[in-house]
Image (cartoon, rainbow, N blue to C red; front, side, top):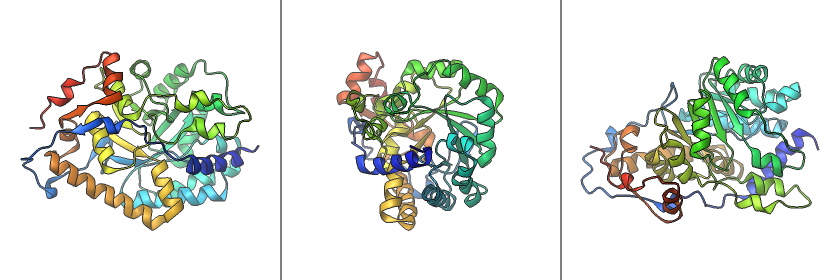
Length: 352
């Protein structure tokens, strides 16, 4: 099967398999504030991803590219939406274009449509330094995502089977590249140990890519004769992974992604420790099923709703939202308790 055909199959299977709402955010509840002492007009949504300043705490996370005209059309519309709403946008893995120059246009359309926006390049952890430079140059990227997708590769019939020296390659790229490096999971979450290892390698931005969103094990199992169904429930839920990543890693910039679908889940992700929140599958579904204008409207609605939530909590900015008191219950509480992470600290916080 050609890489281009596989890319389009991924999109179709992602829409068909959907998101299973197992990201853990139903175990997170804000403590209501009857006297928030703030106003909608005072809310500031600016945040930072590493040293990059963003006018919004959400971004369009990596989805596609390398699938011919169909992925050109998707990426064009994603880039237009990012430009119109002032949010960053990431392209999908660019290895396809590095191996076949005919696919470069499926990625370059993002910079063409959004010449002044924040754009993230994307490659897997198998990439060399030379490939990383080429990916950044291809889209004139402001940062490079390096994705970790061991479970997806193992489930993929033609996937990689050797994951040795990935950390060393990431460290070399981090030390040598001129743009920030974002290391991200692709739907299976990151543990505290993995994040700490990446921090020791010089990585300063982590996207936890938690369980609960697009499930690449289920997608790849659709393409297998003998299923590896045990991987379909494998991973750390997004809400849990944010706390795992943030614990003892206060200096890092933490990005949250993995099945996040609403303004409330965005607010919860930030309150758990995220600096910014990536959305992919949800935006793709809106774009494909309802069209570009519906996607644009949805992003505007999310911004407006997030402002209302922050007003209700008494949080005038993203830094204050990170201090909003909340209660952690259910499976997330149990997981963190077993991992010796104190959840009661979240309930005793105060914004002001």
